[in-house]
Length: 137
Length: 131
Image (cartoon, rainbow over all chains, first blue to last red; front, side, top):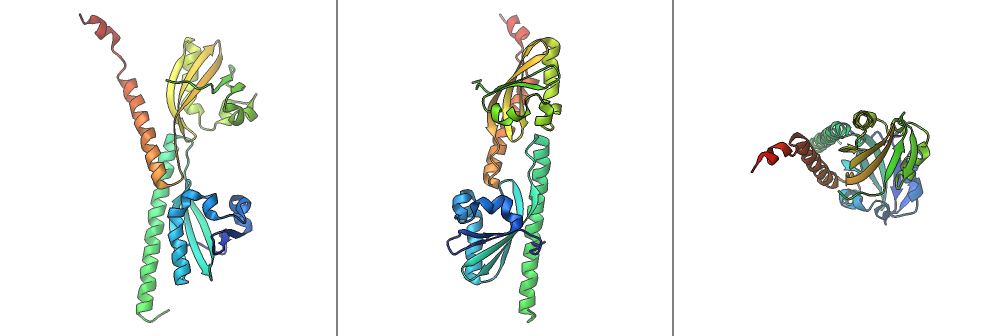
């Protein structure tokens, strides 16, 4: 499971994590935050996302992860370009909070998708490591 | 139970005729429309209580979860018109799995209390029989 970047919305952060570019598909969510720090716009998200961005910048290698935030499970791909980060994302589950039954059902589904995505990414990381060990890029 | 002033009034066909407090924002745009149009999936939860209030002519109270909030509702009938007073009890915080888990636990605990109170109403007759 991975973000299909060609179809996914994306945003771009500068070295201070200010949003400097928003794709058309990301406009409804991020358009009004253009030019602002992502952490001032979404303060609770910092402990969840910041370490991934730091790793992408440090290693220069794209980082993929699955994350729950604000009622949604998202697959995220952080692609470093110098100190900038392009963040592709895909929403794979949304909580339904209308009724308690809907909440339980959608929460079960969201958590299952989160676990599946994490497991798929872990397997992909292992495959990549094995290819590198085997001398195949 | 501490009551807020938040309330709305529905007519005999469950059309919204008056909104007070925070319902001015949420239900105000639906004045004259069915409550069930404004609150999808709420009919199954609320309609039986509305019917009881209309049938008996007595106030009906219940606690239910709807749209991310657990609330205590008191329905006061005036003929077929109902005034629904709503007091929020808990609100789901979906920001992170931690906040979701914590608030969901509180919601479920409150629902469990309500369920046990319904199953185990005060046994007035028994108490009166004691010396």
